[in-house]
Structures are given as C-alpha cells and as structure tokens.
Image (cartoon, rainbow, N blue to C red):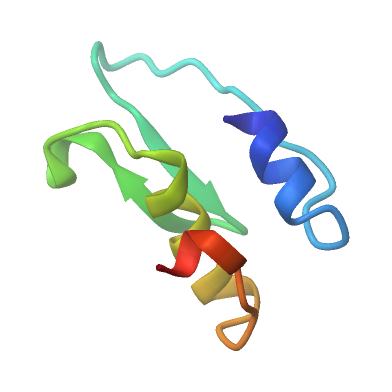
Length: 70
C-alpha cells in the first residue's frame, strides 16, 4: 500500500513511515499529524481506494483519482 500511495501522490508525499505502537492491534494512518484512518474507529483495515480518497481529500480535494473515484 505504501508504494501505491507514493506512486499516486508522487509530487505530494515525500515518504511513508511505519511506526510501531506500544498498544497491541493499533493501526492508524496520519498525514501531517492529521488522523486519516483508525482501524479501531473504522472497524477494518483500509482498502487502497478508501485510503487514496481520504488522502486526496486532505492534499487536494479537487484532484481526480481516475478509476478510484468511481
């Protein structure tokens, strides 16, 4: 998934980092300290399409993601 994000947002994302949590089962995704995804709140891991839309909505809401916007 990291590679997909870096490819889709190649001009906007400089890196994707995995930071281990001290809390077992925690899976959160943040962008510039803004929470994008929390597995506990959402109830599941994100599909690439879901995550790309949320990141797009933060970076550039007007951006067309092509087939991911359908």
